[in-house]
Amino acid sequence: MSEVIVKAEERKEFGKNASRRLRVEGKIPAVVYGRGFECASVVVDSADVIQILLSDSGRNTIFELETDSGLKDVLIKDLQVDPVKGSLVHADFLCIAKDQVMEFQVPVEPTGEAEGVKTHGGILEVVLREISVECLPMDVPDQIQVDVTDVDVGGAIRVSELEIVSSKVKVLSDPKLVVLTVLPPRVEEEPEVVVEEEEALEPEVIGKGKAEEEQAEGAEAPKEPGETKE
Image (cartoon, rainbow, N blue to C red; front, top):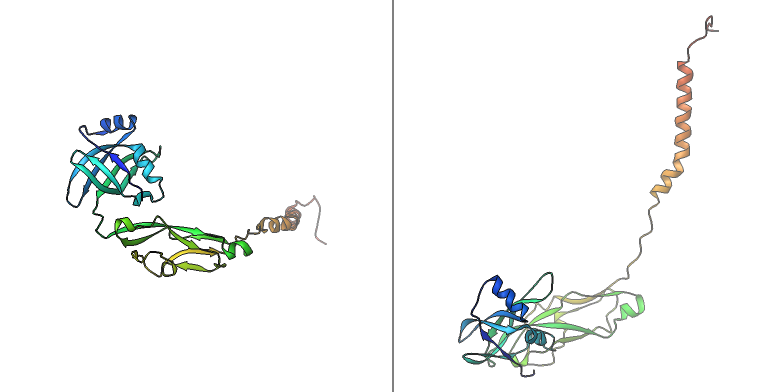
């Protein structure tokens, strides 16, 4: 992991208006907390946080936060994003100790082309995009690659089948959980023919109805004067 330093300023103004002014300046409010550090409210450049998120290690990136009390090893614990604009609104930074084992969420990255997709037109579905692991902060893998080449339609790869390169990383996720699977190809449903059957019956129904009407009219027709039964 590369060494990254993010400068943090003490936050002096609070409230919605103050936060809005910070975002206009390209900054966001944040809080810093963790072992051996008193919780503090700070201000950081949003561009610095975005750069960390776009790195290979993403949210698992350990970086140094420069505060008034000195440099602290931290990682991004939580983020708030504007649901409409998609811009960063707030961040939580967790102080860590590099010699302390912690739990991390590591993304799963499928590699190769599944046999079921290549040969039978199946659909690869990633069920579990991250797995929980436990290790020292400096040993967190950027991602866990999963070779899907031999997975056929109906096949699946579970957590227990993942290949963890480093012996320093312990998997915490349930071994029975399905990470990914190959679904059968989608079959287009044939259009219903109910409407056509109804249309086919219409002439018969119309003819029957017309005959009944004529019969009713004949039965109710008035007799001519002098007309008698034979």
